[in-house]
Length: 184
Image 1 (cartoon, rainbow, N blue to C red):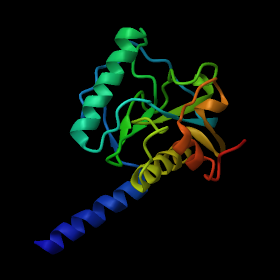
Image 2: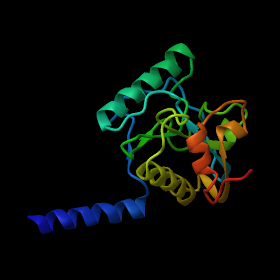
Image 3: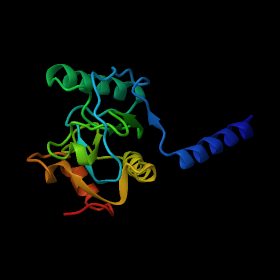
Image 4: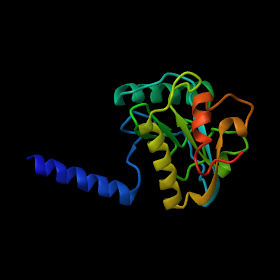
């Protein structure tokens, strides 16, 4: 029985390596359908990293609840057609679908149509991203390159570089500045 479990895990890891990062779908976290979508082109030159500045979550259930809260705020309070980010990273190390691939986000004014937006769930003025979260973010960025959503030489910015904000928080800001595609 242990051998079957090992083989299954190996198959799943190989499939993930071939097909990209395993993304928790919007339906799996209980998200609402968008009111509308605008197509985002391929071969984009930018990715923008954010934090939600809200609650940190470390379990699938807690992250799903936080995602539903954020989506409700974005749709009901701000009047957006959906949650603002393309993808979100939970403290459980999972990548969660926001608007997803090829959909213009609402994450960085004047940058939404030329970038993908990836947000870490939590406040990274206080929290510190785990290695699982960092690996998940780097994985979804690599997946974006392999899909042609962003070019291989894309430029990575923190939200504070394109808007007057503290986002993505000091600890995450210090982390992403060490990544190979980050630019001053």
